[in-house]
Length: 123
Image (cartoon, rainbow, N blue to C red):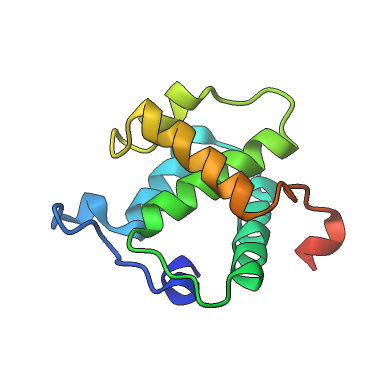
């Protein structure tokens, strides 16, 4: 979905091994966090919302978009969630804590702070 909606690279230019590919990155994040499937679906809703707000938007790195949306969705849905420092670990060190903080702020601003996803959003 990310690479389709935002025409993102499948893996970072500096990393050519399979660990950097977006499907493996996402699978690792899902496995590492063990968050409820609703968080993943909420992330997809946030992607759709972002694309609706910015139809011409494209991203150079899907990893950045995914971890931002997944992190925000978890914070909106879960009562007890990970710290941003933990999210940099989930991101396999691809982003520093400072970058994680910045990515979260930017995504929230791009979404105009419309972060909640009701059950209707999953249909």
